[in-house]
Image (tube, rainbow, N blue to C red; front, side, top):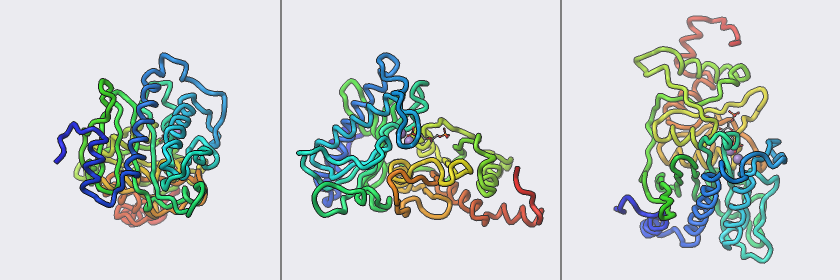
Amino acid sequence: MLQRAATLSQFILQQEREFPHATGEFTGVLTDIALAAKMINREVTRAGLVDVLGYTGGVNVQGERVQKLDVFAHETITRVLGSTGQLAVLASEEDEDIVPVPEGQPVGKYVVNFDPLDGSSNINANVNIGTIFSVLPRVSRAGGGTLADCLQPGVRQLCAGYVMYGSSTMLVYTTGNGVHGFTFEPSIGEFLLSHSRIRTPRRGRIYSVNEGNYYKWNDGVKRYVDWVKSDDGESGRPYSSRYVGSLVADFHRNLLYGGIFLYPADRRNPNGKLRVLYEAAPLAFVAEQAGGAASDGHRRILEIVPETLHQRTPLFLGSSDDVEACVEFIQGRHPAVSQERRADPEPRPRR
Ligand code: AHG
Ligand code: MN
Ligand code: MN
C-alpha cells in the first residue's frame, strides 16, 4: 500500500503497475493536467493582487460574460495539453468549436473535454472555483481529431476529475479504479495523496440547489425538494441546504459528506443549465466510482450520447439513495407521492 503522502506521479506509476493495461502515454495526460492546474492555481491565489479579476468585456459561446481568469485557464490548458503529442483534439466550455492540436505538433490518441474555470461568478468573491476534465480515447482513425471524438457518451471516459482552487487546492480523479484525492503542497509544488479511495455515503443529509428557480421547476422536482425540507426525524429530514454556486465546490462537499446536488430543467433552461461533456459526465464518472449516482431524471448521465459540444442536461448527482429518491419523485413513483395522491385525489398544481 502506498504511503499516504505519495505524489500524484508516484501514485499514477503505482496504479500503472497494478493495472498493466494502463500505458505510460495515458498517464502523461493526467500529469499534464496537474501541471496546468498548478499554473492556474498560482493565478487564482494571486487573483486579488494582479489584474486577472474582472471581465474581458467579451461574451462566450454560452452567452455569459467572460472573466479574465476563464480565458487564462482556457489558454493554459490548451497550451499545456495541446503541445504534449498525447491528444488528438480538445473541447472547452470557452470555445464554440473543437480545439485542434496546433499545427506541427504530433497528434496523439486521447481527447480532453474540459471546463477551464467552473464557478466563474464566484471568482471576484474569493469563493472556491474549479476546473473539470474528461479524458476519452479518440475514435477517428488518423489525422487531426474530430467533433465525433469529443461527442462520446460518458461511459467511454478513461479518466475524469476536477481541481478545486480554494483554501487548499485539491485534485480529485478516477480512471475507473476508485476515486483518489490529492492536496496541493505549495512549498514543494506537488499534489500529495490525501484522500485514497473516496467513498460517498449511500445517503446524506444535504441538498444543494438554487431554490430561486423553484417556481420554474416541474412538479416532480418541487415535490422532492418540499419532501427533503419536511420534518420527519425518523428519516433524517429536513436536510440542510448548502449551495455555493460553484458546481465543483458543491459536488466535492457532498462527495465527502453525502447529499444531493440538483440543477433541474426549468422554464428558462428547458435542458437544464449544466453541460454534458465537461460538467455532468466527468462528475458522474467520479460519483459512480465513489459509490454514488448521477441521473438526468430518467437515465444515467453516463449513457447520454451528446449531439452537440455544449449540450445541456438536467443533473441530479450525489449519494445513490438520495438520487434514487429524487428520480422516483420526478417519475411520480415515490411512495410519498402515492400517499399524497390517496390523501388528496385532486391535487392543485403547486404554485
Ligand atoms: P461556469 O462558471 O463554468 O459557467 O459554471 C457555473 C455553473 C456551476 O458551477 C454552478 O453549479 C452553476 O453554474 C450555478 O448556477 P446558478 O448561478 O444558476 O445557480
Ligand atoms: Mn462550469
Ligand atoms: Mn466554466
